[in-house]
Length: 269
Image 1 (cartoon, rainbow, N blue to C red):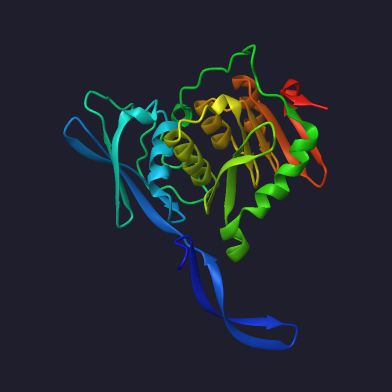
Image 2 (image 1 turned 45 degrees about the vertical axis):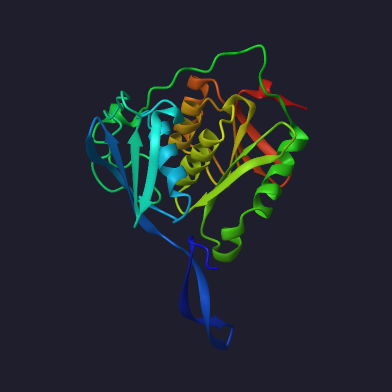
């Protein structure tokens, strides 16, 4: 059975002086339109380029991390058909569509495309408090996470073209993992499935296979995730907002090392 996130192309492969023809696995990329039904009306919210599969999770996660809905309980149903995910809200639920609503297509590399004003890039986020019970992750567990993530990246193994995001606990177990050609989509899918399973985000860290940009920090902040560990580099805005929202941010988590950009109190050495 073919994986929905994998496509194939017939190619000519050149290795030194050897020329052969073969089939090559590609990361599939297709548009997904997310529509919202509420108060007897239906409207299109966004079109995003994504890896097909887990589209109901993507739609739910997107609506949540954009602040359009505040819990999975706001959703009555999600129907998927032919690259369109239609989310019907419960009666009496009023979605917060401004300023979050997209106005045009968002490509696979963009987490804030379609925002027409500077203030619109921000989703309302409350600064995380310092509860008496908070996660504290051993440094040796963090060192093990990139390999555990890599071992579970099934689609990346075939295509080499997808980003991954996973939720992990203080024992280093990956509770859920999602892949997508867009890093923001991978996080939305991950948060969507976590919402469906009623996970307590405050008990988990977010692991990213690539860099940590502002939009990913914001999505984690909306969910209430207290710690983010990225294999790649964070951006300056990511560091600034991690400090603003009280999130522990780790970058360059690879080859037995990592940098803590904020919140070292959640790491034990």
